Image 1: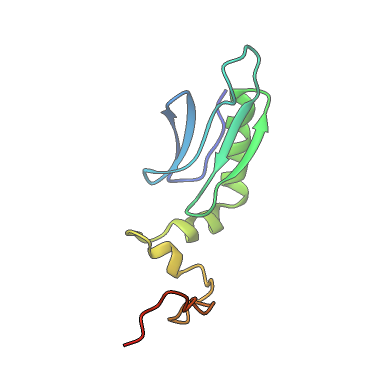
Image 2: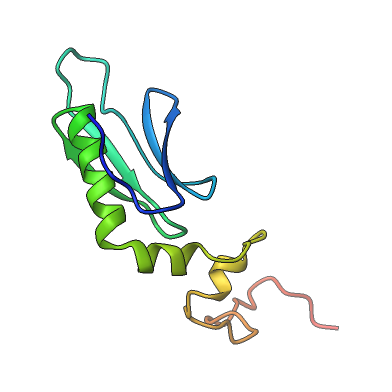
Length: 115
């Protein structure tokens, strides 16, 4: 079944199931959760952030979910995926704690040489 996608978004095959790409960058993919017959499908959504997982009944349900997600959150996904990230640059954007330059606990002096 055909699921309409915003411009620049495409479905492509990936390992055991479909993936959703934005301008060639994979932002979501689906695969069977395990090898049992009738196993649920695991959907991973990760547009340059910690992955979020959903479990759905079938590959078709995953395609519908990915298409709806892309339509609903198109602007936010495009904003998050703009520009090229290299190495660990995404950690600098996180706004997490900044190291103080020293270890937070004093180190033991036991066995240290005194000069």
